[in-house]
Length: 590
Image (cartoon, one colour):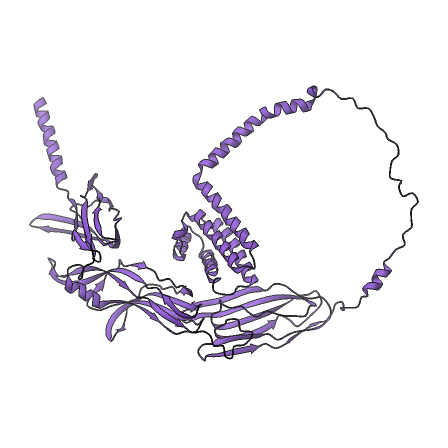
């Protein structure tokens, strides 16, 4: 019986081993030696479906495509065949020998691993990726182009950069493309225009018909004169070229060719604004504007208030210049203006209006003229300066005191009083004492002595409780980091408030406060900051879109401050807006 039992156990082990041997999971590469400018394809193949697939890290390569998943499941001669493949396209980071480590997957409750593969990367080759015909066709049929609306603008004149990917009808492009290098617009005020969906359009490029998609749209306002460089957009894409091979159904197979495309750098030659005919009150406005000064009323009583509004509307660099100031007679009390902006940005630039609204309170009866105000701007289309002057406004204060009626000297004299001397001047000084004997008990029997003696013993439980709370707080590493960052944010906001009126110091401190706040709340480092990531993370944490937009606009104002004059009012508005936005984000974060 024992012999039969051992035989059955051996048969069971052999059956299990045979079943396990039927599972295949292996890694295959397109080549084990390639040039630094070539792309490597690696496939992870299995003959049974599995779960929890984990690819290797690819630390020495950039993943330019994938993972692409393909599954084939068919029957031949009564036997079913199954194959599943995960494919990646890799670009080497440097020359040398590198090992692609094991990938893992779970199949039928068992974990399977691939063997490590060693890849040798040599110097760049003349014809990358072997298939010369397909590679040459992809090179000739795909173009990434940066179309600039005006390469010779004036200072602060709007231009647009539209990035288009042109693809000929002979080939295709897979959807797993990615932006490898994003253009930076140094020395420009910039704003991206949102693109909703990638629509495939038809057009011409160098006289040939192409399909194209618009990838990016950006509005730029140059902030310096001379030759300014726009850095290129670089993308990794996978071109799909028809091959001579066909599948079992007769369909033509596609050859996938990883490819790096770039729009190339562009140079913008920015012209200075002409000095001839420049008005003395010109403050940098470029575009086409209308200007007006209005008041909410022209007749009122003393101590009542009215609003005077200075408004510029039109198309141009609305966020990049100061409005003229309001001047009124000294008898009118004027408060700091409230600045408002109603601006939308599209491919033609900024459009809308900006305004400063002053609150004025007259103190005395009379008629007070508000002098005319002039506003100058440069029209780049007509290449001339224009000046608009408002009409003089007279404020009529009907009722109230009249200025200059009171004679201060007479009023002072009439209030003088005769002082009668008092003969008993030093009556408050006592000449006798009323000392009494005080008999006290010894200090060692007093209640004060016993209180001081027992106080340390009573303080021991309190000290233990405080120590436990301190230990718990010290152990909370994440909480301590958040509290520290919050303190830094408050500190920088305080420094920003102290630096009010000093543009560079104020916006530097304000930007540091916002960055430290984000480091605390979103657990990201300064090196990871960009507007798109901040917007994505805040939206994921269920912060309202209006609040996110306000936060992004404050960061943009901090960047903008380097290139444009900023008023005290704008700084105060940005400070108040930052404090309010941080408070709202705190309440809404989930």
